[in-house]
Length: 501
Ligand SMILES: Nc1ncnc2c1ncn2[C@@H]1O[C@H](COP(=O)(O)OP(=O)(O)OP(=O)(O)O)[C@@H](O)[C@H]1O
Ligand SMILES: [Mg+2]
Image (cartoon, rainbow, N blue to C red; front, top):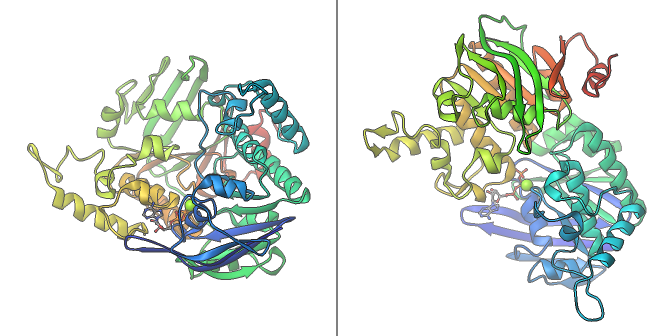
């Protein structure tokens, strides 16, 4: 089967999101779709999925033009989509999520969950998508939730599968498993469109690659014909430094000290189990680890959003254990949270409002009891420029921004204050190579200006490149304290898995 997008154009107020895009996807092929933040990838896929209507252009399947009034029509035409942000109902079981909206019924018209569970099982064994059909969705890891999304799409008999940044939330092991799954789908004759910012991945998995910039297709290539450097330049229109440029750190006094801390998670399980660490002024400490080893709870505790069950946290020698988010914040701690839509932004607030979200009560924005919106707007305009947030205006809501541009707003806000400590979880998740280069540069500059920096990331390449000192977290504890220039990624991977090289 063949899917053609022809001359697709889509405008939003002030933005030409897609500009006469031509793109073809074929059965038995993985098409890698690349492009900088705001290039129009998600918009294009939303048009294909019937969520948006194109202003111009055609969708043609096997030579026949199709019109989609909504996702129902697209699904009927064989299109399936795994979204950038998952759309599962957390309290439903896996099976309930899979069948949501298309529940099979028995002869009396009553929903037949047994039959549904059987079908889920059949799809999952056919494509190697192991899941427990009875599990409650919020209890399973992100990588498995993604399988549920895939099963959901296959349950609706999709022939064209769109994945919007599927690996952004996966651990390296999960990425390998995911690649195995999509290769299997391709070999079973499905057409795959795979959106990513990770050049290594696109080179590894794609049969063909298309690149979007400013809403236009700027090139087609194949992994055999190109390199990471060439792809980066094609995406952003200039050469990009893919390595982190930095001198050796000169650490000073201890800024953050964590002493034998225990933290419990939302379900009262102890996930941080007697963890101690130090971060000094002028150094970047990275924490590598497989998701689910207590990193989330550690960061929430350090930023005051979750209490410590025992142990203590000191900032510049003062005990700040359990001070709460506003207390920690006012002591000069910046936080880039891992979940940008839940913790980092208020999605229906404007960019300006999000920029002053945690400082509006301080000067220069607050003048006694009145808010100085001109000062806030001026600050927002400056940051949008500096951090290259692609937006027609600072007064649009955060949910109109592309995923990567939402992340840039958070990073811009957190880097624009005078802080002593930056705690960043997955700071470059969803960002394009050009933005990553800029933000890595900002992190190194902050370090050189004497800020203490703690980076928690499942992205091993990134923490290894950025950190001056690399800690590995496993099962709630720090199990290794390494010099990233002296250790191999393989050895770090072993520590991450709880083994020793
Ligand atoms: N619902 C919307 N309302 C207004 N503007 C929008 C809307 N959705 C997207 N845009 C704009 O369209 C442009 C393309 O956005 P899109 O989300 O398609 O980018 P993307 O290539 O997916 O980027 P990213 O890599 O950051 O996810 C952006 O400028 C964005 O601000
Ligand atoms: Mg997107």
